[in-house]
Image (cartoon, rainbow, N blue to C red; front, top):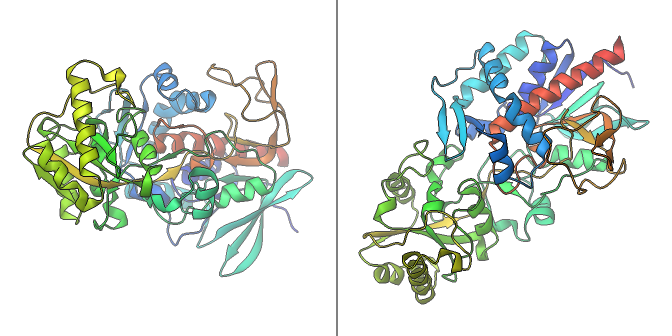
Length: 481
């Protein structure tokens, strides 16, 4: 086999892969990008286009304490520079900084325009793109990654390289992996993303001996209007029920199953919903919530969200009293008697100032449902992408499974690891892990940046993608000097 030691092979053509590919080209490497879909973009193409993360790192640690602290710092510390870099490539960012809930700041992009600008610059710099070309496996020699095997039209071919960057988008499109790692019945989830991300990078790396991150059972998504609602891939956002933290959420048994206000938005409630019977339930609000913006101005008001769900064929019930509302719930499979008891219990606790006594307790938005009319919308849990994946260090290097102590060992609360220029990653005084030479991961293939709570998917893809591209380019250049 011939060996192109100065080539970086990037697997995946979403924001993470394209950011890595352009960065590596700018650093002087030769780059080939493979994408299994017929076009570039990945899940980025159907995203909301807000590149945001926490405005304060310590707040990020407090809200998402089980995520990797070094990777979270990487996202936080490099997001402003990375957004500015996008602008140098012709990506049009919104002029104003937007607020996300109580803790986030970001700027908007038009996803299609951003992908087009990145792809145009990649081509202009001499990058090679291979569409409809999937990652089949990694090529290893002596424990060093030497390229990939690709799959196209049923044929396997070798593509040599001095470094490989995995940015294949997670494994949300793979029911087998979802059943193995995320939840017992993947049918509880609607795929709220493109269907191409089936764990190719995760499978190839773990077969080669890579370590996996904590949080493999975590994912990002939002509840959608439940069937019989119908919508296309580009209507996911219109079908999304962002108002979960303003509601009382009941499962099909008519029981509250989570603190609706936990996590960093409605994403945490959606994960709890996925573990209920059928992944289904109902979100109930009173008229006070109907004019509110669930994401503080970023999204439309609750009234519009419910109207869109209804226009798509979703079930939305309106009633003058909670008793009347609950009488309509059996039509969508929810126990009326138990639902009414749950709502009365919730209201009594809110009115008495005993929110902590509820099970589960309600941490925020402690208001009873008392202002008519009342609305209920049938919801179904959905997955946009997995957030657990491969164990990487803050240079985006994938770590060996057998190269040190367990990736579940205690990690520090500091903002960065130490001794990162060496072949052994040293964390504190008692944690050692070795990177797989030549293998990097970014985007949803890099695990445990978000963990139940959410740090912003586009921000993570952009910053870790650029980090992977820069370090992969440095490796291949040092190997050929």
